[in-house]
Image 1 (spheres, rainbow, N blue to C red):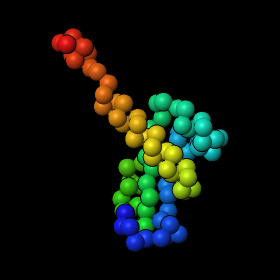
Image 2: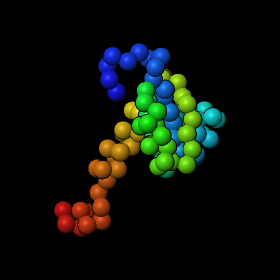
Image 3: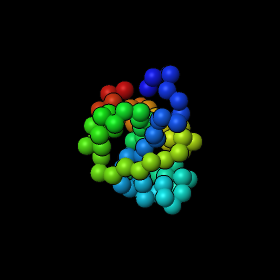
Amino acid sequence: MRNDLNDNEITYVLFGKEAIKLHRLSLKALTNSIDVNFRVGAYSSIKKFVNDTKEWDDFAEISKEDFLILRKINTNKVSYKSKKRTFFSRLFK
């Protein structure tokens, strides 16, 4: 995103039907889930948002605070998955 945009012009979005259901229950339920795939995004452009919605089954608007928390958690999930050892890496130490 560009730095000259105000927070009022940015919309924060959560993608993923199962993640949205958990988020509606509570943010803690979503943050504690391990196997739920979701994505968060901050949009000021309709075109980019429409392109991203094609990849997901559902979306919902969320607050900036929730966006920051979920972005951090999602980043940690990706880094954990990339560090996960495969069968062959354990076999050939």
